Length: 372
Image (cartoon, rainbow, N blue to C red; front, side):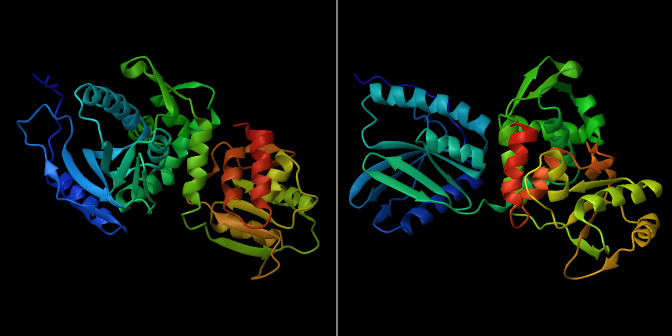
């Protein structure tokens, strides 16, 4: 008598059924691929261990997809799912159910890190944006589409505004354990905002945790992964607008000192960034043609620009002003040689989406000054 194994069932709601139907449409649109209608697991049939089954043929080769549906998948979710899938696969093999069967995880949204992890483990996936990865013996399907809108929106939200200030604070103290309240104070945000960001980062599996309740602390275990993800996200976002000026008879190095002197006299908070700042942190270029500076707008700023004899230009600018929307954009600046520079992390992020040799300078700054 064949032994029947019992696995925990996941309920398949209407949205998950719709996602399976989208998967079928994607498969049928591929050349030499046919797909039967999905067989959804009845609620009372708890021995199956998957939410739906789809029989397909790829270039005449039969294959059965055993589908598990999730709302979303981040690296932490993937690691949990992989353990479960391995256990299911072992038991299916023991019960002679494995021939020509492949596990496929589907979700409304799958983070880039989760996709990379699934590809490394050769586990198939599909998301509502149309991305598909299906590796099997004699079969390899790969369709890469932009992330679905909900995930894109969530990532933009995480890497912008006050939430980005929390990321900045974590990267600035990447080697330290920090509590939520302390992190909120350092990032100049509410405890609720800090808590939301930490929850998101836990899903990416970038944090280590210790303690419980109010004494809980986090440590950024993967600072390089966080910085890489932030830099990648910035390349999809519109860069800040610049106000361009020309200040007569001033070389770049002397201009930085002059700007620092005048802005100091007007008691303005500012942060030099881009190449001029990187050159002071970790010299790389023989010369820099322009100074870019984050500065709060206002009457005092206009007076300072007048003192500098800064003239508005469309070409040939040697000073570009990035108008800061809040003091949070000036967090963790450092005073070097008498001038306030944006933090090395901020300078790096500004450089990676700039032009010319800025990306080379960004890599040099990261190696020499940031270190991860």
